[in-house]
Amino acid sequence: MIIYNETFVVEASAGAEWLQWMQQQHIPAAMQTGCFSGHQILEVLDSPNEGVTYCIQYQTPDLAKYQQFHEKHVHELHVRHHQQFENRYVLFNSLMKTID
Image (tube, rainbow, N blue to C red; front, top):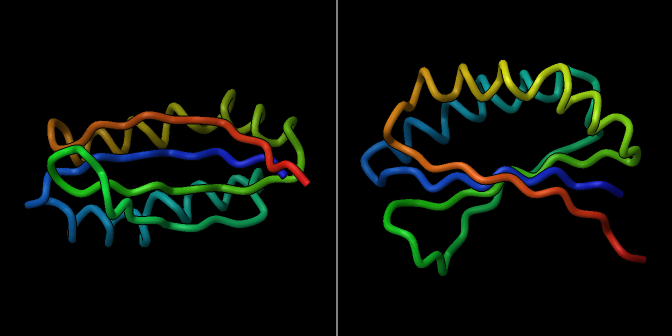
């Protein structure tokens, strides 16, 4: 299983608005691409960062599906996110593979 992880550090004052927007806008748009089979939202409880840290993890059994998402969809999704929360977050991504 391939897991695409987006980690967001969000200003505390924007945390509730951000989470609601992600659940109603960003995540559904990412899932509608057809590149992922599932997702989960995690809150990092012991983050050393100021604000609130969340991880959004998208699962796909196929690396080619992730590559399709990265090539065709990720830029537009990140632009929309940036327009909504400019200067109120930091984002970094990672790509992982589960080990059986």
